[in-house]
Image 1 (tube, rainbow, N blue to C red):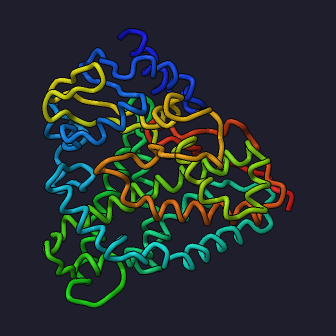
Image 2 (cartoon, rainbow, N blue to C red):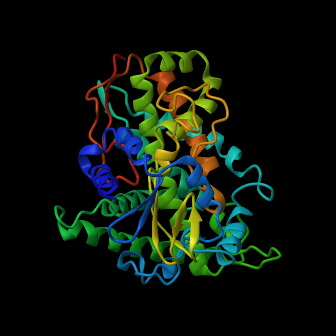
Length: 403
């Protein structure tokens, strides 16, 4: 236990952010590891996929033997923090308007808008010899897209940029080093955004429209409608989780391409390569590294270990996607990789429901960046990383360009 505990502490320490993968390899020596506080860390592909599909695994904080103050007190949690049957009902109601079979063209139908948004952001690079792929591009892109999807008036989009920035900043809050104002700003932004979305939703009832809020507000399917609180929580999930996934995937993707110039040149001449390339990025440099907690409904066997009911479980997804027992040459970036069943968007009933949009956004973003940036070069490698070991990605990615 002592060796595994030390490895986990080193992974969570900021010094490991540029390259946690050697530490994941150490962690995989004990696929299911008991920690001093009674929690368990799971780090290998087989064990991760097994428990992600195990009905004894709970995403509801109420099933922990020791409550977590940080996630208590939420009147209407999003379905990502619920279990069946509540989770399944809310997810089905959301997916009726977000993807197949009921709305198969929603994501693909947004492609012209995505292209226009990306082109506009890259146009904004004009005259700059150095750009920040995160601040100038990856950060504003998904907020604009999600606001359009929800039906937020364009003049109100700047408010969402400010709210999302404050909320994401607060996610990285460290009480030992950060001022409490950082956390307070995130709490207030969450309240303001919920209030705004609630007011916007009231306007959507009994009115025809194509945006997602209107569709959810007027859904008369066989399972009825979500409540207004459930719709707002779903919209909030899409905004925050969808934003962070896409920002990190684009930033990690561009960093990886700049580190592999032969692949960058190949993508420039073979744009169709972007589809398998993004799948390999989701395995090789995923946007989400850790699911920091799950709970055991009852005693559950994982490999040779029995995890007691109520135990907190930490899932090291990025470690599983680099497991050499599952992937040949697991530490090699290979966009031609076959059989790439990575854990970049999780697995099981909580598989990321915004994954199709994040994929398309990243495919368009990387294709256009590579096509339009002449001679891009990293200013610093490794770049500075955001504090979080859970949502891992550069906080800035400065790139020089020759034209």
